[in-house]
Image (cartoon, rainbow, N blue to C red; front, top):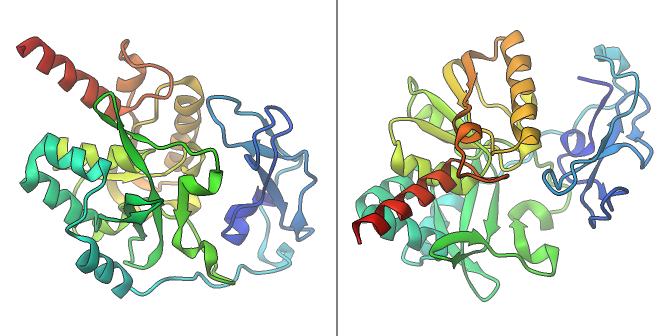
Length: 307
């Protein structure tokens, strides 16, 4: 354990304040001091608006702690019963939202259904309509939580719905459970036990993992859910796997993931780890675009050529 780490990693929930650089409301992730057993001063943190801001201020004197230097231990990991996932599938399988509906229309019912089953994906009621439920299940098949996000079709593509009220954009099932010690894992981690010898590809967005599973089902596609979630303590067991990282386009994402890849290599956390430059080198993709954007833009271009 390091002396300074994100408070969320230490306690399993967000400790955010308004960003001192861009003013983003509750976008500045604070650091935690494991020696002093307290939050660091409010000037130390990182803005989660990676592309629009990206401001970061880290405490000086980062060190690796010995066990006797750690004042308190983390509470045990909280998990949800696996039955909650099975119940959601039985109750909500017939409903579709903008994202699931798009995938079914684009790649057909057979391919879409295989992907939905692989990820335990369902549509659930949310904000007056339906939205996908992303179940976060680790590589030990422990249900960490469920994440609901609204999507809408814009210019023929599924895009995140942005509400004025931040709490409407995303809902985590554990957020209303008192003393629930949530720890993040990569979306799709449970698939590793189902496909033990398959190459692993890691992207940021859950949507991208689903779309790429339709396009290249021979690989396992995991999602970090955030640029900065590419962390050792969130990684599933990848010891004997070939791993390819696919950062979103932009120097912040690419540079950060490249640094993390080097860190993981030194610690032998995977059989091999490579960082793809495909998205970075593709000229018609813009800042923040990813593999799914490439797939959607190229298929749209091909369809216009045919007509």
